[in-house]
Image (tube, rainbow, N blue to C red; front, side, top):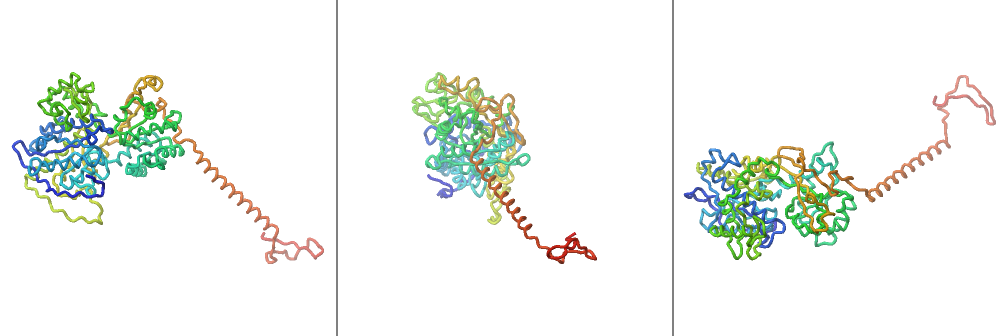
Length: 634
């Protein structure tokens, strides 16, 4: 199914009616779409551990909501929620997991949604209630076409497209994360206001043009002390066009002499090309004073996996990456991380988690709860694993995306980035459904929507432009969650208020105690990433993390200077302009001198302007007569 933007999807399916009440409560199945594989092949952009960790956060949230456990979200203990009969199941019709394996592309999420809707048939208890959007913008926007057509609310916990959460773009969508404009503004705020680097080049692959456009808008609106000027340039490259190749783009950057480079690449093969090209052009040499930063379009953990490439190590050492922060990443007292660690050695929960894995292991147990104990024993003994706890497992080595957690998973593994956002997304959907359910039980009938006047522009908050009671309650939910103060609107669109978000600058560098010289003989360059600065919610300044200074390419913590190198092009331009000004000034001077000389050589005096004494005084006599004394103009 090809779903490029602008093409409509026509579904010959009936809209899903409200789920029926069951003996165990009012079911509200929520499908979560996670990137375990790339269309069944290994996902080179996202590690399988990330998808599994997000699935763990999802199951935690479901259990907490169903039990109305306020250990992470205090609002779950409120009376109206305790009395709510809404239940979030972990299985769909036929026992299928509520977790769908989708890649970063458009087609898989659409197929997963259509399959689930079709399998539910007329069974109202199996109808989807809500959807957690896929990880990337491209996949999320494709899924939103289907959910919008089926009147199913969808919330994004990671995809940050500006179009998401705007009813005139994608109906019934919301973001529990701030959009890409907010991210770009935070990145520029860090570089310009916290680091003083105002000469910035933005290098991006052509398919990320929208990201570059958003970055340009953020530059124009960024507030700087004393109105400091930002010198910003952007350049795209296309791997398939030699005129706009990566090498040509790097040549342009070198010619303009900007020393701060933000890179936006979403594919590993493009990063590999950058390692080679930058090294060939000497742009990884510490003496050149380049400061490289990566846009959060690539997974940081995946970026550091290969440790055998010296060119990669030279580029990445001293690089920075700004990331949206979960609460647990900067606050050790965060309630979510404490709840996560409380599951240590909870075998029952881990077995339930493994059973939800949408990837079935080939030639062995693939999620059957009865076989999990046997599989756990085999994994603990090292059979069919990669040799470490909580690892991908396959007895034939060909099951891509399969991950089997050991009983001590929550003790030995920290939650992945955005796990807190996944948790809060499930809680928000659950609370929103409770509020909608309470209204429906009281006989609430949604008012008829008035016709929208196109001349008024797109509908904005608080107008959702929909009669869907669930969605209208969802976008007004507020609570204190795993990621802080959660609110699904910013008073303009249905995207999270950026003031409630936390951002952190990570410094990528060679692992502690190593350098390029001492590691070269081992042909291994282990890298690490360290959180060095944080901008917390509701704050406007960056706070340095204690004991974690930013290390640059030269191995020091001193800011590289100059911000812009010496440019012959600019020198030539200055010389030409200066010469033109000198010539113009010289010409003007000569013209004035000549004009004065001409005026002095022809001096005509009018007789009427002469004033004589009475009587006239003769001061001499010449050949042509007498010479009289007179005054001329005083």
